[in-house]
Image (cartoon, rainbow over all chains, first blue to last red; front, side):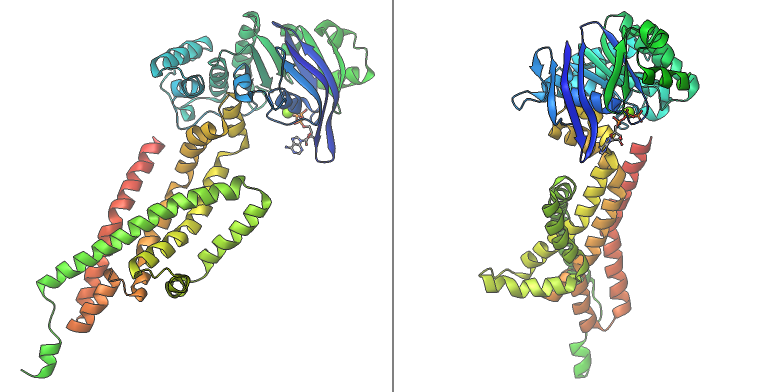
Length: 240
Length: 220
Ligand SMILES: Nc1ncnc2c1ncn2[C@@H]1O[C@H](COP(=O)(O)OP(=O)(O)OP(=O)(O)O)[C@@H](O)[C@H]1O
Ligand SMILES: [Mg+2]
């Protein structure tokens, strides 16, 4: 379970997150939507401590993420993250990209790490690209590689930050399909996305962010059908 | 025979050995300076990139001084300075120390560029997998940054081989100094400078060849 309690985040004088309260249960898929600059990415970065926070608390499976005593490197293994830019390691083959962290972070043997990598690459449909360098992969394939790389740490949670926003339109589908597959397998996911179709069909709940606050959260039927908030309705009217 | 011919003797085969030995000294002081300068330069470059603002300002200033003051002035200044602080060093050690710091100032900029070439998003991706700061440095930043700035580093190394000629002002008999000695004796500047040039080329060629091969391997 991920618990976010009264989370505040500033960049200098800029108040980017203004008291977020949010709980994501095991097995749940939460989509986060909202205008550019509303703090969606920052929320994800605060959850796995890639950003510091100024006030409040993030708790993952009972562990306070930002506490000094927390082993953040251990905690992050349990929080896979996929970014807008796929960030493949360009000097490593697909298999090596995925095997690197199991080897150096989890201390798996070369053989074990390779087996994990092959399994996860097949999982995301890249079984035929094992020894290919990222430069020879399309954006969609590199994004699936990034998903496989995160999955190789066997996380209980996956955070997606606009995983399809940087892709050519014809490549969006294959990445969404992979995310959908994970959701069906029961992965707990927080997906920041502009893909309203995905948010509606795959999520258990959808959260709408507006100017650093969580304006509204509820099942897709509520958000897309009968949103309580005027802001939410306005936003959705514009994106559709 | 008059006195002149006995004082000036023509170029002899044994002089080639003298030049080769001097080329060996050029190689020695270059290798030491490039090696030490590269290690220090990587540390300085990292400090410039990752350190606090006052480190960036003070270290940046010192390195800028090493880069911009002509090497020959640095050499003479420090050669005369070491004895004053009770460190009478021979020309070789003085030269190697100054050349190492000079190299480190050049490498620091290259190293900083290499780290910056990797970019924050890539490093966040690495850290999000649970890598520590140093694992990220070792397995992500180093290999990617190295490939990005390796040609610049080779350029620095090659220039240091040539700049090592300036250590001759301290009396260290490296290739240039040896050539000057032979020219004075033989009065045959053309052949001797051509030979010295050939030696410099022979010292640098393996490095540029090796780096070219490495780069083409990284590209594929
Ligand atoms: N490192 C940073 N330094 C300063 N300001 C930042 C930084 N990162 C983000 N911001 C600012 O914080 C605000 C929220 O940014 P954030 O990236 O979380 O928005 P977002 O909802 O993800 O938007 P988008 O849909 O464009 O990705 C923006 O105003 C942004 O300019
Ligand atoms: Mg964002």
